[in-house]
Amino acid sequence: MGKNITISENWVKNLIQDFIATSPLNTLQNENKDPAWDLALVGFSSGTDQIWQQYKEYVGAFHWTPWEVFNQHCPEEIVSADQLTVISWILPQRKMVRKSNRKAKTYPSEEWARIRVYGEEFNVALRHHVVKSLEHKGVAAVAPMLVPNWTIVKSERFSYASSWSERHAAHAAGLGTFGLCDGLITAKGKAMRAGSVVAKISIKPTPRPYADHRAYCLYFAEGTCGKCIDRCPARAITVAGHDKEKCREHLARSREYVKKTYQFEGYGCGLCQVGVPCEAGIPVKAARKALERGELPPPPPPIA
Ligand code: SF4
Ligand code: SF4
Image 1 (tube, rainbow, N blue to C red):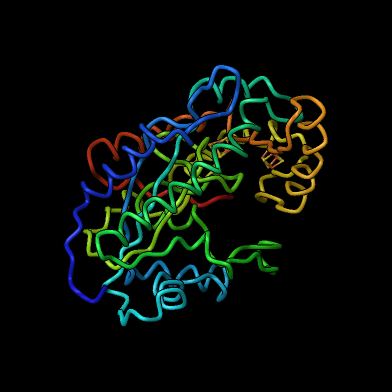
Image 2 (image 1 turned 135 degrees about the vertical axis):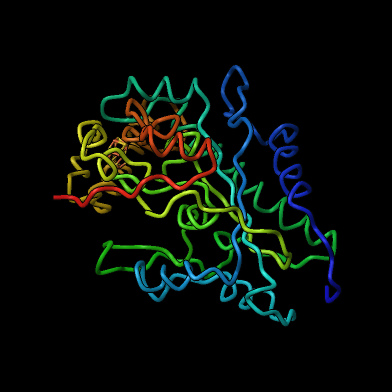
């Protein structure tokens, strides 16, 4: 895989959208055989982007740069960071899934729980498909979430964090900013799942249409909202942010409920992702309009 092979942005986007449209794995595995996902948002970031170093400082030194994860898993390839592109995608939750979970008060709707299991199984298959398709073209690639040494690490600042975060990769690729509840608010909203692959290809990075990593959240941009606080049945969200431990404990409790109520092995919650202004779009008008015009949104005021 030593040659320089040209892979275009459109080739990658079509690869992802075609898999979503045609793969039999794209299913909720329910009676109606509903698809798990519609089309994805896709963005690209460079292996040399300064943001990877900033993640090391902000998230922790254990958070890999694209070069670190690529170099560990494709050691036969001699590459520098500037030869790497991170492909990121967002799978927005479908309307029927969001609608069903809006009614949930403590544990997830059946559709949401199915997405958490079968929708994520599809997301795993999509990562494999992107890597394999690139390899078939002679391009080395790795899906950081699927490597055996991907791990969750105890973190002083975040209680725990991982060696690669799909949401952070998507933020780097211009696909969204973080909300009070820690979710990534994208042009299609916060109800979504994300994925990524690091590849030895050169694709122009997607511009980040935000100067602040919280520009799309009403709480940080305008000092309003906080609706996700009330939606959380575990009181894991406050104005101080997201308590990952409380959230994790609630997810663990949901297993019994899902098994008993829906008769399959699953779990989930996501109540903070629906029934809120950021569910299916960017709720900050100035940021949404700026994105439509291709400009940066105004900087948020300081939080009191
Ligand atoms: S519900 Fe409101 S406060 Fe919470 S993340 Fe969304 S926009 Fe921000
Ligand atoms: S996923 Fe559920 S428990 Fe976790 S923060 Fe959101 S609403 Fe709360």
